[in-house]
Length: 254
Image 1 (cartoon, rainbow, N blue to C red):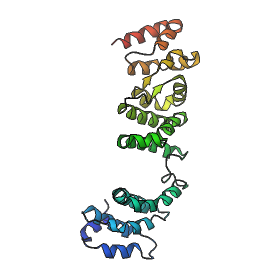
Image 2: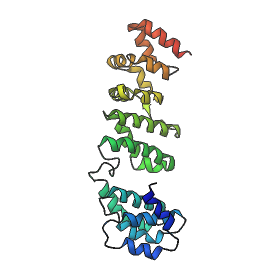
Image 3: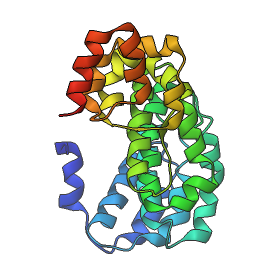
Image 4: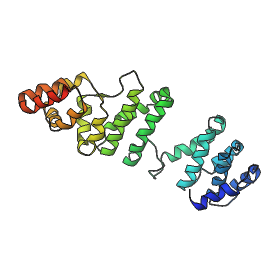
């Protein structure tokens, strides 16, 4: 916390709701100071839910810092004020179409947004599985595997693996199609992609020879990850790279 912000903790007192309401509704263009003061009042235990409408009105801004402060307030009180939270929906929709990548959400095609929001989906899955599945977030996440950006690919694998750990259903299976997409970004993200040990499906035993060649070129990394490699890897290796395959099989028996 900066020395500039710390003054709010030393000067703000409880019982300032009317004053805060007046400040939030003033014509003063920069509301950051007022919202910060309100956040501090909230932090020390004062109920400021009565200011919900006033805070929502502060969402109409291009200032990212102010938006973050307002969102912090909304997250804290939206559950206890569901009817009032509806007032913020239009602004949320508008923000989802904002040109600033720090504001846009999962539907954005900016790699910065995608790689960050993939982890958010995994966190949301821990809280509300039905919501993630019903709203199509899980399918959207799987669709991002097709992204060529290695950072996005790595985060997608990480997120899907975390989701798989908390689900009894097959969420993330490695198929020929999935492998082909992941290998596109393998050079820059293979440590993350392979270290997650995703489930290998039966489809992997019927891989295209070209794809197998690519996998065999990364055999050292694969052997360090899987104790029992897919049968297709071994079969193909016996006919093309007998020596390497024997070393790989030995590693799999460890």
